[in-house]
Image 1 (tube, rainbow, N blue to C red):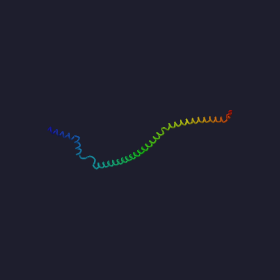
Image 2 (spheres, rainbow, N blue to C red; image 1 turned 30 degrees about the vertical axis):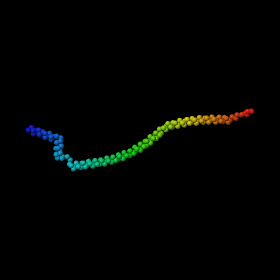
Image 3 (cartoon, rainbow, N blue to C red; image 1 turned 120 degrees about the horizontal axis):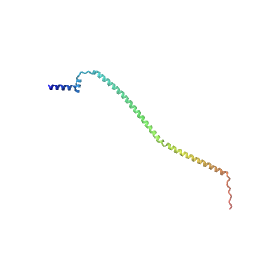
Image 4 (tube, rainbow, N blue to C red; image 1 turned 45 degrees about the horizontal axis):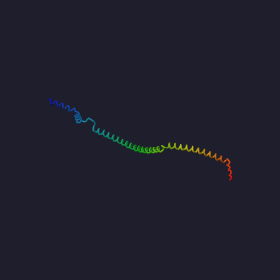
Length: 142
């Protein structure tokens, strides 16, 4: 008898094992949704996914167009930026050149003022020489 009890215990243990529960569910009559309902539900889900796919595809095209537009704009701005950098490099020496020209202009203005004073002094000397009688020269006797 002991052998029979062991066999019955083994059968009970096997029947409650996780894999056995699946076998019982597979052999049990279907109590879930109707297959027609499942097909209808899957078709609706399929249509929803197709609609979502269309929306996402349209969004992807929109983003690709925006990417193209932004890439062109970045390229134009990079070109303008490089032009401005070149202007800055060119004009970087402008303040030093301006200061040098200002200094040269001041030096020339001082030189011009000095020369005007010299001209005025020479004109006075010429006028004084014209107003005085010419020196008389006495002939020398031989």
